[in-house]
Length: 178
Image (tube, rainbow, N blue to C red; front, top):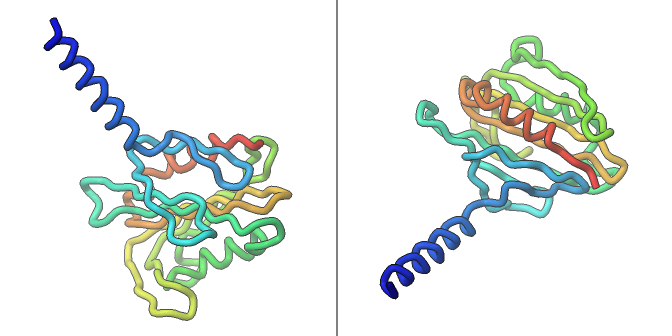
């Protein structure tokens, strides 16, 4: 009997330890709490402006997509239209060729602007070396708040971003303020 109890305790301990290593299901960015889509891997953020970061993988994609939540504080980070224009400007093609579109919604009493575009995405830091990535897409969301806007940007292979856009949108729609 003691052997069965020992095995049960061992399994329980390691089952809990394995579960504890998983990323939390919810996370905060400014005043908003979001629910992370299942299967999206949490990545350690690389700056104080990044409040959450995820890697989205798919067996059919040549590389993963990246999702980053930015929060700069009240009055910082620029306005909605300036950020939409900047995101569209991160593509090599002119604006009229990237299938750029925006859509507005209200979530938890806050205005949200969803953004989508596709083409040759030019990655890299402003003023630094850049690398065009053909057949890429961007899905973004800007959640407006008096405490400062939250900017969410997903970039990656076009088909992967398109395939996971419903999960991205559901994550943004899960936002609860407070």
